[in-house]
Image 1 (cartoon, helix red, strand yellow):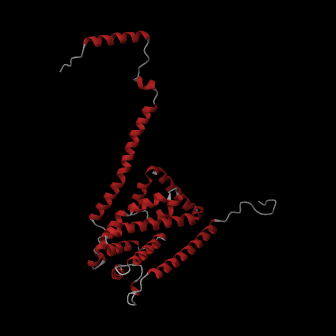
Image 2 (cartoon, rainbow, N blue to C red):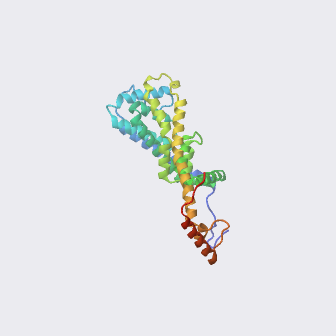
Image 3 (cartoon, one colour):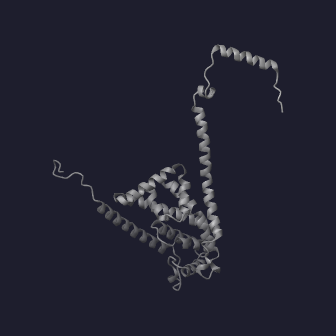
Length: 311
């Protein structure tokens, strides 16, 4: 419908156009991030021997991991801070764009620095990198809401998270521990269903803690391993460890639920009228004559002394 100036109203861009613009901007962000990653690595990386250069890439197999571990072990004592910077920036890049290789980096961290140092470092990298993915989705993800299929999915997740609003951090931690859905789905969905950045970061850090313990512990014995079969990612020990983390997460939820019921019952008593508290079911207010009789009975009881209990 044309207005008085000859233009048309309700000329909002189509869904396909919004998706194309978002994809174009996303590609630009990925390109700029890749250039930034390359620049930082170029500045921070120590001077390598020509024979070591082919080894320097994101590990995709056990052999790559072993070779990279040998390379970092060779330079970590000479350039300790540079190695940490390269490790962190690479980890953040992989997490921000949900690229594979994070597990190998956690194992590598355990091999290079040991579990006490690698564990908090890897958890912080995962949580911060996932937060970058969160921000990217918050910036370019609204275009997906124009697609009915994605809109229905987000609405379903929104209702599910709304039902867990009081236990949202515990709920997100359990989602991180569970194999489904994939973690990148959680990173992409959370900014669009009302999850704040701070609880998202905390839940991510705590949620990946158990798995990162396993990965860094495996990395501690990487030098003695001969094949990928020595990883033992699936074992009873690891299963019990993750189960203990889940139980530890759910205990505060159970306590909160129990005390919520107790507080609610106390609140109901406090809110009840005084007449309902004084009168039992079926009772009615006493008349003046009944009050006098009860007073006389009380006097008799007091004069009679203590009652005798017959066994």
